[in-house]
Image (cartoon, rainbow, N blue to C red; front, side, top):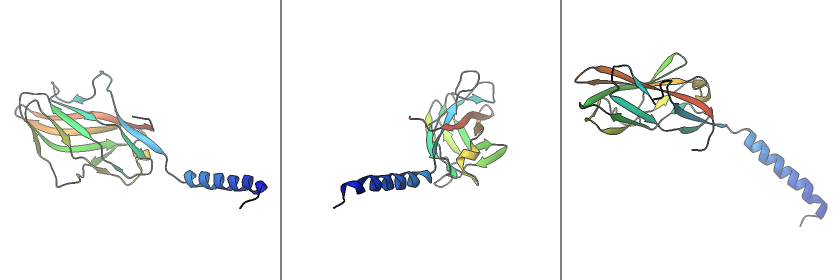
Length: 162
């Protein structure tokens, strides 16, 4: 049993150990899709956007070397679309998609349909460094009418609740 006077130093020691433990932990950050200047979520580099994408906000530790966003893609055209590649451009470097499963591309989306994409990016630096400036997520596709490149912007920021 501890003496009454020994409780204060013991509590102080426990507090210091707890703070030291959390000091070494990576802080978190959010990586989220931002709207473009025209008010839409994303744009297509063709006359009429045929693909729209929704990127779910991802919470990560700042020192992680990977980004596996959840992306939902919608084909709004009256033609099937074939997605040929997905890539991320950050800080002037293009990162190739390294899907977790067998390579799912090319992936065909029927007219007016929606699908989730298998997307995984690996970096040589932590996500805090990769997403210091906004990055561009690109989806290359072909359709009966033309080839296209849909893109949206993703940015890192402080950890926020969903």
